[in-house]
Length: 154
Image (cartoon, rainbow, N blue to C red; front, side):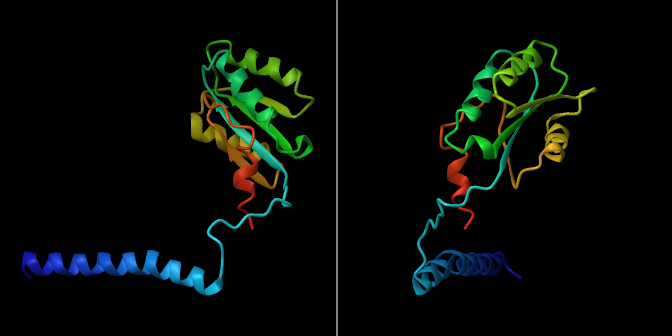
């Protein structure tokens, strides 16, 4: 088989994938009269935001507070922050926010450093919500950052 033949085969496969994925998808949506971004504002499941933390210092307070200040119903949004053996005052900073959270923020501390992925898994196992959202410890979320993705569960 020549190089030219292989190139033609690959090019044809790419065209088939493109047509199948995009053009046919658009045609099917139009045929079914579906909107591009179907949402439901009346669906409000329980949500737990999981935040793995390691040596964030005072910055963790801003992340945690931004989630607690979310426009999602307070009774349906809980936050679990898991400290992966920080060597600074991150754990104490997070506990300070937890005291004022009305029980909506739980702080867990690993006995040994497990790493980010295993910490997320541990915190997820502690959650009892219908939907789990993972947020990095250095992110300040918008007020509607929890509500917007949930609206897409149609």
